[in-house]
Amino acid sequence: MDTRIRERILQKAEELIDRIEFIERHFSDAMPGDRILRKALYKEFQEAVERVTDICALIRQMLRSSAEDDYTNIDYLVDAGVLKPETGRDMRSANGLRDHLVHEYDGINDHAAYAAMQRLMPSMQKFVGEVLAWVDSDGIRS
Image: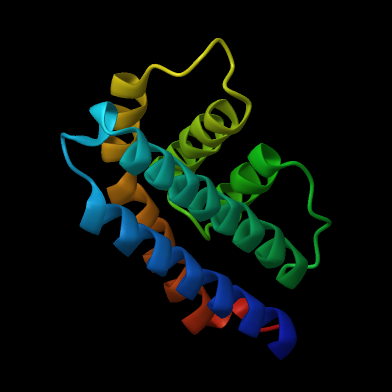
């Protein structure tokens, strides 16, 4: 077992939990109309998804597989049994929303982004749980 990579996965998971908790503490129906709150939550969401994709790449390393693009890495972890298919689907959606928020493709519909974030937050919690369960299981051992 590569303890260095394991520790990096755990560190990224802690950072992800911190961002999820921040979003959940500040998430409200006021978000779409409050620019400061909206921008803060968009930034936290972007960083949360970046932790998800970092974790996926690190797990591929643990599985002795070369990391690829974010979507392929998520699919790989579903195929490897690290993530449940529903969690993988939602992490792909979260990554797409992150891309949309970062690049502002065709502008951002704040109400749609709010609804998507609200739908995806429980899945991000599930992602953390599935990853931590995998880290604690025999699946991470060489």
